[in-house]
Length: 270
Image (cartoon, rainbow, N blue to C red; front, top):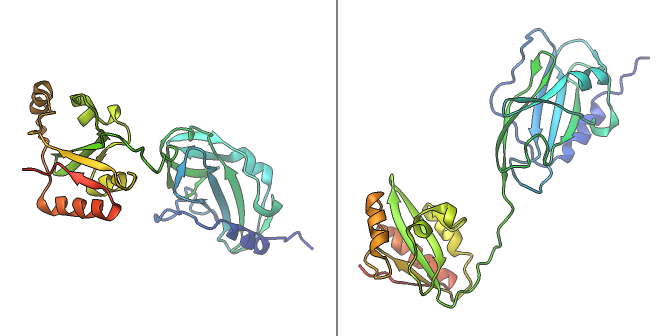
């Protein structure tokens, strides 16, 4: 009796991955006559730098006859293609089944851990698919983000300063600690001088305000404030940027949100 320890067991084992991302696009098969179909899934879509990235690669027989698949052939002829770069890899089989006969409708799943490997140790988006001989799987996209920042911002004796301006119909905001000195143009406008505190969109500034300690004071600054120096005003004009308040509707939304948080919002003078 042929070895047909096939996919029913493996199908049960594969359910250990709680969330899987799979491209909506139809599967590509360069060899349309092949009964084998490849799929690739990730355990989630967004990762932090320290997260393990787990991929599940599945080879399925959609034909009418059983197929013998030697593991050494899979190992020697499989490549992950990450952002266009083809990389050889080792893929342990789920449940220990590394080769055998694939009955019609059955599949072999393989699991790959690529934490910090193949360039994924950097923040960014990665497009991946699996190539085996002349077959390719669906394509998925994952995102690697930086480590989580501290949830709660520190208490500042002089409170915080909030700046707002509009570019291409989108509101931008900067939240920085209040000090006795005047702020520079770079500190107010350029995100690289104020990482994590110069944001775009109402939702983003609300998320930043949410991290302030209860009772913290925020002073909302405009171009009319005496703390805006002549040099900063000149650079703002040169770059066609005006420090202004948003619409009354947005102001009311942010004011009410600050009240809900217990944050004292001031400086709202026309």
